[in-house]
Image 1 (cartoon, helix red, strand yellow):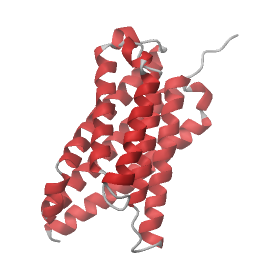
Image 2 (image 1 turned 180 degrees about the vertical axis):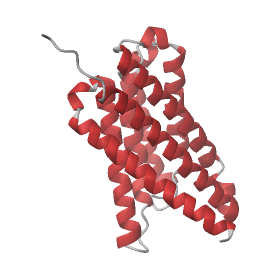
Image 3 (image 1 turned 45 degrees about the vertical axis):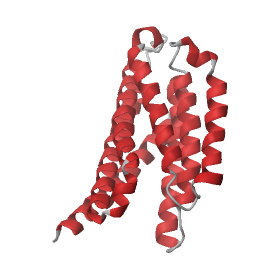
Image 4 (image 1 turned 90 degrees about the vertical axis):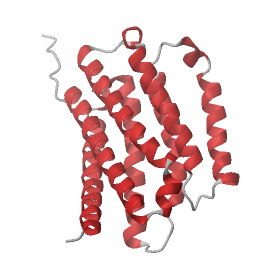
Length: 228
């Protein structure tokens, strides 16, 4: 078995395992929605979007061979930005400027993401500009959450631990993914580098989904104290 075949096998298996973990997270969220609390409930909407896009992407690949599925990435980028911004709105009480200017940020950035898909980068090619911008914003949210952790911590202890786990997962995945998209033009010109970058992204995504699943499991598996 040559190196290219090994890389492709790891890439595919990591991708499939990530979707399985994501699916389990979504099921846990749906069956335990009321127990999650507002921040994790909002995260649940992001996970459902992620799962739907993953399933649709696989349908395009296996059932509609030859059809470009990159428009899904453009839609996902916008939804990812909106839903994760909404998630962090429930977590970040500091800095105050974030809460005060939240809707201006969402409206302005959302319009820029849409304009990028309409006029700068076709929906049939990678939206590297918008994707890089969104990743930087989300990493900024995650760093701010850790920086102001003592001031932003309003959740019960078990939920708080899960939120820190989720936030760590976001920092790890989006930091690595940011590097990949920033170097995408180089990787596209070099086939071996291209495969390695997307293998790295698939492994990062698997780690991301495992940490998210662990965070949700820690909440839903905790026994509710009896009122008697």
